[in-house]
Image (cartoon, rainbow, N blue to C red; front, top):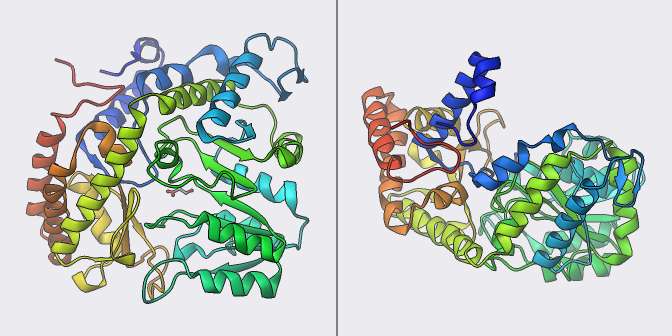
Length: 423
Ligand code: DSN
């Protein structure tokens, strides 16, 4: 049963209520390893489902374009104060609808169309909005891309420096969506200073690890930091921009009125709740357990002959190149999903295959750590992954079905916030 309950939704729209229940059960039964997903707390769920969704609040606290902000202003100020305190930032904007709009706001704050931006290439682990060709950021700006080293799988800092000094970008991005190793923020900051560029750190994946002290912080090194709020930070779908006081006005103007209309006040409230949770005494332990689980899972996969980009992980994320296993990423991911292990197929650096049918798998341990799985379960998870990948290579559906049953049984022992089977 869903918590909060779906009583009214069921009366009004039973078909939709069934779909929500089915999705909740799916999340309950699976080992969820999508590196950008998590389970939010019941308190965060409740905040997202409040009457705050009824309100329009264009502007910022104390200077809105609509009346009736007596409660929304303090809610947004609370979220801002908590974000600043948690990350030690001078300024926070909690209005971006999600990660891509937050990143677009950075362009609007600092660049003009045609200006040069330097970011990690998408197939090397970057994000679409860091200047990839099909994104507005690659179409409307002169995007130059750095990569990872073929021998180490780690970001090539020599290439970053060479390109920065040659191309003189106005903006340099560090961070991305498939980076298994610690990001060297001080080294990026030094290059940005040398090149006269603004440094933006996109920490969407690792924000929770930073908050919990399990990854170094970009604050104090980057001029501006963007993050979604729903990955390792374990909040609702949303985003934030942190910056120095110097850039506060430019960032705020870029978000509103530059790009967005009214903020989603119910999301702002849920972000405030998630930030309170991330400031609590248990969150540091959670962040460190995420990393311990990822390291244990990586070690168990290496033992089984899996080729991990960079040879392992420092954070929540593992990127596997399946080439030596004789199966591509997509059929493997689809078989794993049928077997109860949810992850995504992913390009690997220098991938000879196409983005929609690449060579790799991306895994993350944020969600399973929330469920309570620990390092002792990781060898079993690796063994299931291995069995199913091998089964996918020979199209053996019987193995897939057996593993799905075993995983359902395991996950029934780990409660999920927001849903439990009806007794
Ligand atoms: N979709 C996000 C991820 O999975 O990393 C990036 O935007």
